[in-house]
Length: 291
Image 1: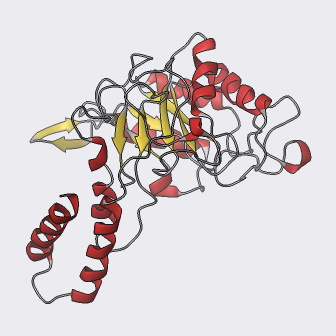
Image 2: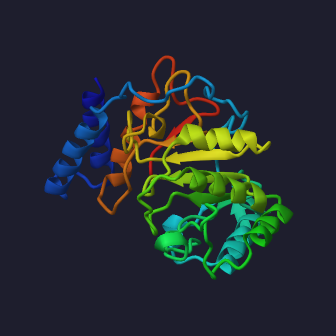
């Protein structure tokens, strides 16, 4: 029973970290939230095709390891800041497992992702983020995304982008916007993309079709907050795969992490429904909580 297991795990954690009687009311509330989270399970109505089974693009055969800008900087990012992050990943200035002069890159962190903050909100057609051709508009904090991607590649890094974000929050689903997103993803030379759930472009199958048609494979992160079944009225917008539908390479199973004592632990429990026999989290199609 997932709820009993959650109770046992949280009790062990609580006793080990804060001791009995300390923060009792906070712990009780966190524990109740945890029990609520793990009872959700996996919905049935998601995905409308078998053309994109788990692992369809051959990428992400192991869980992804890298750095993305959001948790550190939110939307306050610039092109120079992203290049500095690339240097931080590849500089041999760390001691790792007793080995001095090591890099995070050597430890396996081989990708860097641009998150929210590059978009030219309101600078597109009808005060949107896309122009009349469907191309996303880029703000002046990022003067040349192609140069940014090239800087990452010079260091041996994979570079990821971010689409359908929350800063601009477009509310109308438009085919040419999907097409424009992937046209620039391809043109700039990105290696992967995180697709958030705030905007109107949530059809993960259509995004995958466009990526496949581009002639290049990309790692695809589905950040639709763990919403199984239809998302915004679209079965192909589900955050959750099936045994024969996973047009993305990793999928978020939880809402946002917060500053609550056990927020990270509650989010971690949301992965459990995808670890069955056979598991829905597997090579090429990994479950992950917001941590």
